[in-house]
Image 1 (cartoon, rainbow, N blue to C red):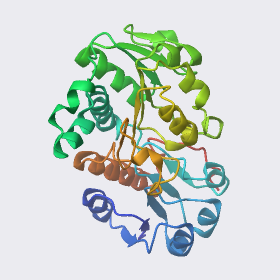
Image 2: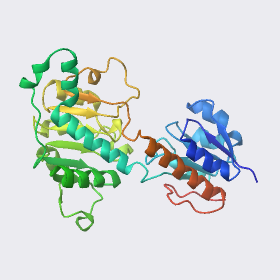
Image 3: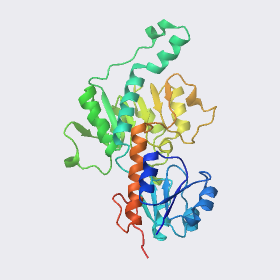
Image 4: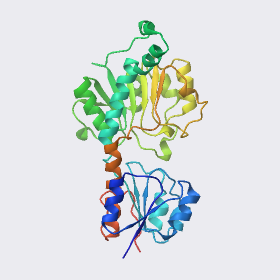
Length: 319
């Protein structure tokens, strides 16, 4: 039997070649909007999904669908409940981004603490001595607060402790002391914001944590502290972050993800001296893109071969 795989957005050729090696037909999507997927999915058995919205309407239109394989670790763009109801597996590639994003966060820690991007801009503007009044800070002995201690959070902790000699704090409501490395101190929600010199966010996006970090948390942080968000933009109340930065409640921020992507050109975060912004690129390496595509493709192959996937994120009612 020949199966057809919908790929709404471009993925690494290695993933496509793996699917083709099993005789599957590839259908490149006509777009990444909901209406595009509804139209394209009708004759497809699987979707290899990046960031396009896989809503209940899309899943309902996919009468032949057996699996939606997410390209990466997150899956908040898929209606899991509807997929389960329709008997469709949803999978992710949970470890595909771990090391890549952790490396990026390490770069963010260094960039923001040493004010590298600001100095880069100032020297190009002809101000060599701007550095004299805008010094950075050393990281040895400083406290890194990791909010969310999953795969990426753990790897960031490991690299920061052993590589930068930072003290590591974490908050994670699901973390048990016996599952925590001995160099990590578990904090409650209030303490981690109060004590950390740098806060790095690593929680998944769920309904209950949308906008959970706002003016209360920023007010609790040290005026010298920095915030790094390479998780999901929606976990921060962006207006309140902008207010906190303007009021100098915190020293600065490194923002890789936004409430709205791409952000509006007039978003204040794009023009503030104490903010570094990047375009949702923490996992954007050649190696990571290949791994995400191959792992997603391998899950499609398993399900279409009547096997249980390795990384399911729902429990479908298989008819």
